[in-house]
Length: 236
Image 1 (cartoon, rainbow, N blue to C red):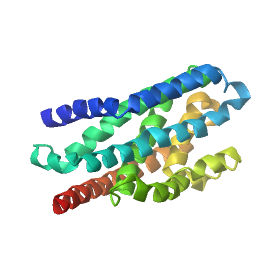
Image 2 (spheres, helix red, strand yellow):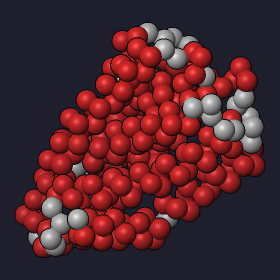
Image 3 (cartoon, helix red, strand yellow):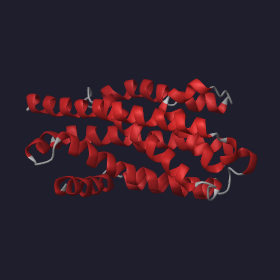
Image 4 (tube, helix red, strand yellow):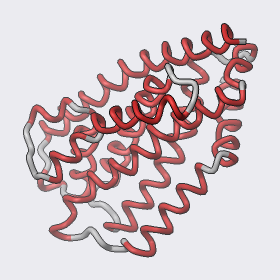
């Protein structure tokens, strides 16, 4: 546990050095300047896809950038000689990015729409969405050693990930869409601000979808991270 906490604190410092906190601050300043109180009343249905797009950057692209930076500097292989297990490294990294993404997106939601009627649902949606996107990012980046090789595939990944935001903006809602984890996260975000429009069954299905996806993707992300470390060792 001590090793995981130390890795978490070290990752937070690395995130700051890599400019992740500066990027988050820029997003907040942008919305403070142009979007304060923008999404209220009948327009609140626009908040979930907007937050989902923000989570895509804070979760998927940040974790991909983190690992690409480590592979470029050769520090990923060095972690194998520490007491930290692959699972511990994944947990510490996910926790560090989750804290940053959660703080950023809670503040974005408050700037755009004010206090939600059900804050716990907002937190659950953001945490679930961030976790899913972090694990997907690890899986997506595991076969790439540089930004040049990852850039084009990342566009395909992000298109599939962001698909529910398109159907949401088109106002096409179907119960089967909750199978997609980002749709499930957005259901929680909508219910946070429009609790009267959410049903218990829809939220239970969304919760089940998030838990199942997170469980499967966490396991796959662990394997992907182990594969990255093995690849670094062979290259060395």
